[in-house]
Length: 501
Ligand SMILES: Cc1cc2nc3c(=O)[nH]c(=O)nc-3n(C[C@H](O)[C@H](O)[C@H](O)COP(=O)(O)OP(=O)(O)OC[C@H]3O[C@@H](n4cnc5c(N)ncnc54)[C@H](O)[C@@H]3O)c2cc1C
Image (cartoon, rainbow, N blue to C red; front, side, top):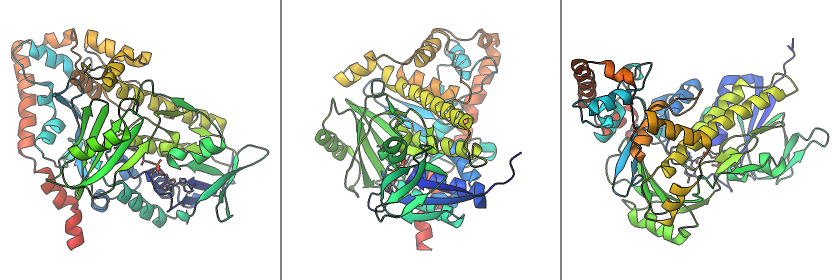
C-alpha cells in the first residue's frame, strides 16, 4: 500500500472562471496535501462572459464552503428559475424551460402522461400551470423555500465572480503568479508537461497541469495536440457579441433567449446592470449586422463596449491527456444557450478531486475514466442543445431551414421519436437534464406526443379532477405567498445596500 505521499504540485494555467473555480475547490478540499499555483495574465484578461448558471452551482458553493449571501452580494447576483425561449418554435411564440419539476410523477410514468390524460378529460390548462418555478418566474417572485422546494441557480457578474473565487482560493492557500506564459516545456522522455515558461524567462514546474487558458488551449492543444471534434454541423453558431447595459427595471428571476433569423440573443438581469449578447452564425449574418441588431434591441444605455467573440462549437478529443487536464473553454464549447459551460467546469473540477493521483504516477485508468465521464456529459448536453434548433417550425430564413434539415446524432433522434410516439423520456445514467427539462423543451418546440401511458387512465374522473386540481391550486397558493424577487434579493444579498453601509 502506498503511504509516502508528498504534496503534489498543481499548476493552473489561466485565471478566468475556470481557473479560479478550479483553484477555489482544490484549495478548499485538498488543503496542504497540494502545492497550488495559478498563473494568469492581466494583459490578456478573461473572456468576460458566462453570467447565467444552472442549479448544480448551488451544490458547488456548498462543497467549497461558499456563503451564498456573500457570494451573491459580491457578484451582484440575482436568482434564476429558468430560461424563457422566445421565437424558437415560430416567430412570436414563447415557452419556458424551468428548473425543478412539473406536477407529480408516478414511478412508472412522468407527469406529462397525467397532464395529457387531463387535457382529454376536462383539464385544458397548460403544462406550465403545474410548475412552481415557472409560475414564480412569470410572477417575478422568489424565496428560498424549506426542503429545496424551489430549484434555482444564479445570474452573476462574471468578472466579479472570478475576483470573488480568487479571494477564497488565496485564503485557502493557492498562490497567484501574474505574467504571460510564452511557451510550454515538455519532458523529453515522458512527453509530459514539465513547466510553463514565462515571458520573464521564469519556469513554473508542476506534477499536474490544469489548462484553463480559455479558447487558446495553450497546454492541451498548443503543446499536446489532442485534437478537437468540430460540432458546427450540429451547432452552427460561431460568433457572439456581448454588451452590458444599465438596468431599466427591477431584475427578473430568469434569463431570456430570443431567437432571430440567424441565431439568438440573451438578456441576463443582474442587481446592478443587465448582460446582453447576440449569438449567430457568420454564414448568415455579418459582424456589423449582428452588432447593429444587438445595439438597436437592447434596453437601457450601454455601459461597456461591445465584445466580439469567435468560437467553433465542439469538444477537445481528450479532456485529460498525460499530466494535463483541460477545464473550461480550453476543453470545448457548445454555445451558451442552456448555460452549461460553468456547469461543465464544475463537473470537471469535482472529478479531478475525486481522481486526484496518489503518488508520482498518474493512473491511465483514472485518465480513461475522466475522459469517458466528461465526454459523455458533453455528448448529452450537445444533444439537448441541438434539440432547440432541429425541432422548430421556423422556415423563414436560410439559417432556420438549415437547422430543420440537418442530420442529428442517433441518440437525439431516438429521444425525439420516442417522445413523439409515446410521451416517454428516459434519463440516461447521470445525465444533467432531467425528464422535466426534455419534456418542457420538446413541448415548447412543438412536439405533441401521439399517446400517453395507460397508467394515467387508471384514475377515475373524480380522482383525476382532485389530483390535477390540487396540484394547480398548490402552485397558485405558493406563488401568491412568495415575496417579489427584487425585494428578496435586496434583503438577502443586496449589493447596493452593502456598499451604502
Ligand atoms: C458568448 C459566450 C457566452 C457565454 N455565456 C455563458 C453562460 O451564460 N453560462 C455559462 O455557464 N457559460 C457561458 N459561457 C462560457 C463561459 O464564459 C466560460 O465557460 C467561462 O467564462 C470560463 O472561461 P475560461 O476560464 O475557460 O476562459 P477565459 O475567461 O478566457 O480565461 C482564460 C484565462 O487564461 C489566461 N491566459 C490565456 N493565455 C495566457 C497566457 N499566454 N499567459 C498567461 N495567462 C493566459 C487569461 O489571462 C485568463 O485568465 C459563455 C461563453 C461565451 C463565448
